[in-house]
Length: 508
Ligand code: SF4
Image (cartoon, rainbow, N blue to C red):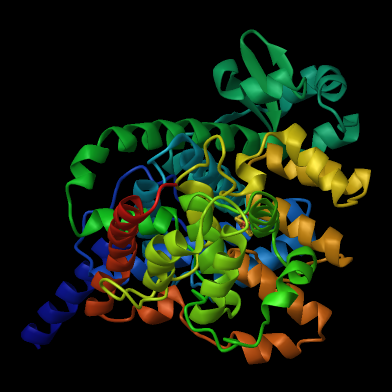
C-alpha cells in the first residue's frame, strides 16, 4: 500500500510539475524551454510552426482578420498541426509544449535578418491576436494576470459619473453600451495605440479602455516584448552559428520550402524545345519568364541566371541533351562560339544534371531560396521580380503583360507589404483568370505545374510531378535530420564548387 501510494504521489507530482509550465493555452513566450529534445522533434516542431505561420500569412492576405471564415480556417490548421486551438481545452499539454518550443526554434531561425524578423513578428502577432480573441472573458483575465498585465476595472460609480465622456470618446459606444461593458483604467504608456487612434477617453494620465479593445493593449505589449527578444536573440547569433548541427538546420528553416523539391521529373523529355517560348508566356512565373526573355534577347545569362533558369528547366522536364542543345543554340547566337561552349558551359550543365564532378543531382530553386539568397546585381536577371525589381519597373512589366490597372495595384500592394509569394499568387490569378489560386505558392516549378494543370484540365500534373520529395517526409529519422541539414549545406558547397568550375572554364 505504502509503495503504491508513494508511487502515485510521485507520479502526480511529476505530471503536475510539467503542466505548471503552461497554465494557459496562450503564451507570451517569455522563458525559453530548458528541456532536452531530440533533433527529430526539434525539426518536426519547427516545420509545423512554419507551416502554421505560412497559413496565417496567407489567410491574413486573402481574408479579413477576425471574420468567421478566417477563424474557421485557422482553427482547422491549428487542429491539423496539433497546436492549442480551443481556449478551454484541458488536456492539451503536448500542444502547449509544442507551441512553446516551436516558437523559440523559429525565433532562432528568423532573427537572422531584418526581413526575416519582420515577417516572423507579423505572423506571430496575427496568430496571437486570433488566439487571444478566442479566449473567454474569464480566461482572458487569468492570462492577463499571469503575464502581469492585469488592469483595474473601474467601479460602477465612476463609470456612471464618466458615462457621457466614455460614450462620446469611445467610437461605437452608446450610453447603453457603456453601461454593459467593463472599462479598465490603463496607464497611457500602455494605451498609446488606442490613444493615437482616438479610440479612448483620457483623464488624469489614464486611458479608459473598454473590454473589447483590451486586445490592442495586449498585442502592443506582446509586439514590444517579441521585437526586443528577436533583437537580443540576433545578438547571440555568433554562438549559434558556431554550432555545426544547429546552424544548417536553422538556415534551412529560414529559407525553407515545405513542398516537393521537383528533383524527380516524371515529365522528363515530354517538353520539346520549340514549346518553351509559348510555355514561358503561358505558364512560367515572372522570375523565369524574365530570365527566358533576357536569354532570348542577349543570347547570354550570367551565372546566377543560368543556375536559376537551368534548374527550373530541368525541373519542368528538359533532358540533359535538350538542355545542352537549348543553351548552345542560344549562346552561339551571341558572343560564345561552339568550341568555347563545349569546353566550358557544357561541362557546367552536365554538372548540374549530376553527370560531372561529385555527381550531385541539383534540385530547382524554391521561392525562398531565390528571394533570400544571392540578390541580383547590375546586368543580372535572376532573383524574384516581386522582391528584387524596382516597383516602377515591375509596374511597367505588369502593364506590358496586359495586367489590369486594378490587378497591378493589388500586386504592388502585396509587394509593398513584402509578400512576394502572395504577389506572385495574385499574378497567377490575374494571368489565369481565376479568383482563388487554391494553393500556397512556394516554388517556381509548382507555379508551372499548377498552371499546366489548369490550362490542360489536370492532365499534366499527373504525368509530370507525382513526386513526394517532401522536406518533412524525407526526414523522419535521426539520420535524415542530419541529412536534412546537409542538403542545404552540401548544395551550398556544391554551388561554390560549381561557381569555381565556371570561373575556371568560362567568364560570366
Ligand atoms: Fe518566382 Fe517564386 Fe518570385 Fe514567383 S514568388 S516570381 S515563383 S521566385
